[in-house]
Length: 347
Image 1 (cartoon, rainbow, N blue to C red):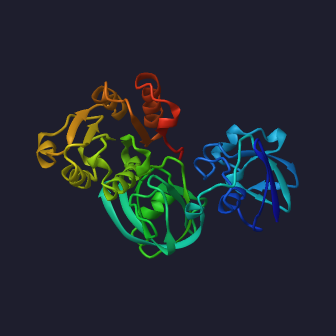
Image 2 (image 1 turned 180 degrees about the vertical axis):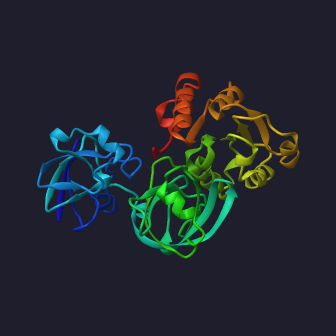
Image 3 (image 1 turned 45 degrees about the vertical axis):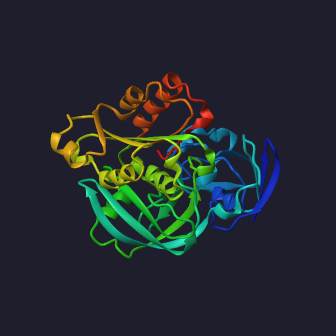
């Protein structure tokens, strides 16, 4: 099928498979179509069908609250064409995507599922062919028997990676997280689409790095830090990491973060913030290279970063309320320009 996209920067055409999502088809052809979550929740990929017909593959997608169905608007990330189709997208589009990171389809197998806390798992996906991605990107995973796809940021960073590592927090009623928390998923096959996301880090950026993460949102930050370590970025640039959880039992990855601080003691600073309880003295003693504080992570960040926001690029990830609070702080208190604040909307 032929899909035509009318955008603010011109008209583009691409081929789409019979059962392929419109967004995924356009992205794999290198078009910079607008999106954020790529799973039907944020509404960023809305488009109007002005010719032909398209049907929503997920009729209850939360992102549909942002579209005008009376004007035949759809979410490209959850819509499939019923033939040749013409879309109107309210954004500028180009075909200048870096060919190394053009999204594509892969198959993978779940491997090494392990508990990090009482409600957080780590797991890997062994890929059928390697993937090159930017630090901070994510993929969409789909499993048989679980409706819809789920977006997860990579924890690891490596060019031509044949394995992707993730963390997932168990959510009440979360079908995919419930499936992962079952005892029989090692070796299970999953469909993988990606890489996706624009909240990315590249060493040539040349700015100090600020990471503000809540819970499993630390995943993409770990990829950014891994990329920075590989490039010895923190020998010459500052890095500030703020990791927020509720209590001591929710903490994970402090051993990995401690190792990074040891590698770059002069320039890398990590603070763990506990929002619901005081910091136990034993936790401080166990991780002497980590700084600790109490309070919501964005509030702790504002306090400890006061006077140090100049020249930083900020990355934010975590639960939506935490992300909203951090973004307000970075705009209103830190006065960072929008170009220096990077995040992806997963929910």
